Length: 287
Image (cartoon, rainbow, N blue to C red):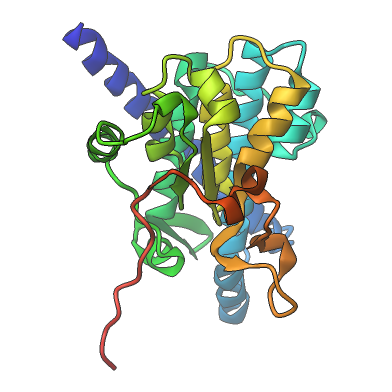
């Protein structure tokens, strides 16, 4: 069994490296297309390169999201071939007709691959030097977002310690993964229930401000289902939401990204029984 686990991790790592290389190629293609040069060997002015590098984070983010959605689409087509339209539109707010199948990957590993690909992206900084894209390891994006990605075994330990000390029946508990990221706490919580699918539809909720991370959490949620209905998709969408958990709706706030009393089946005001999280934070340095 151990050999199987090691082999699975090795295969996933190889898949991630291949996808990172493919993602890099797509980013470079998208960036260089903006130059509009007929001659690929033509000298590019310094100010043009500077402007392109300024735009590169947005270009890279767009490419990254498209690749994640293609992977999600590949998973959905395999797992729910008769519900592709509903799942993609409702859970991922994406037109499936604009997605492409990604071949050569074990369908069951796609949720893990998406998570690792997104974390690798957040740990990267992109630049264009002499027409070639360069990916460097950097914490810049993580610092800007205040993102903290807890190792899975630590998330599992925190969840285990929390749920073994609750004073109410687990099956009746309302539990929130606050600042869920790619759902490491979320999946650890769901795995404690005898029926993960019932827990996803009735007990466990999640929130984050990173749309791509939330995409991965929703993908993990649907991966527990053998079959899925449009109603299930609607519930998953309203239980795993893209909002800022520190802000409530008001005339001074952007309603689209702020919590409303109606969110989470009214639990924003009624309250959760349990909140499990490793919340985001920023390191403050003196001037």
